[in-house]
Length: 136
Image (cartoon, rainbow, N blue to C red):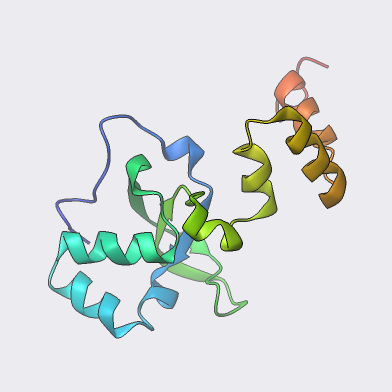
């Protein structure tokens, strides 16, 4: 790996990373291969931004079992985790869940949840009682 042992911010945002890209997918782009091979931090970050990473939250490389976007086969290897962009330029590509999570207007959020049929009922229960339901 390298790129100065993976670019991160002063604050740890890793628990908020909501997207990832597999190196299996990234390596299909010749620009990525050249930037990563040359350890060109500016070019790598420009490409990550283009692919949807909000760089103000940093990014990290993990070597784990995951599914690349271009295949349904599980792969053990490196992937880059990051927070998805939510700016206007990237808005057409943002997931509905992220759109809801990043909407400050409570009425709009409610409307989006209704439209997407995601009431977050189970998410509210997990927040209240924990993932194992220990407090229930």
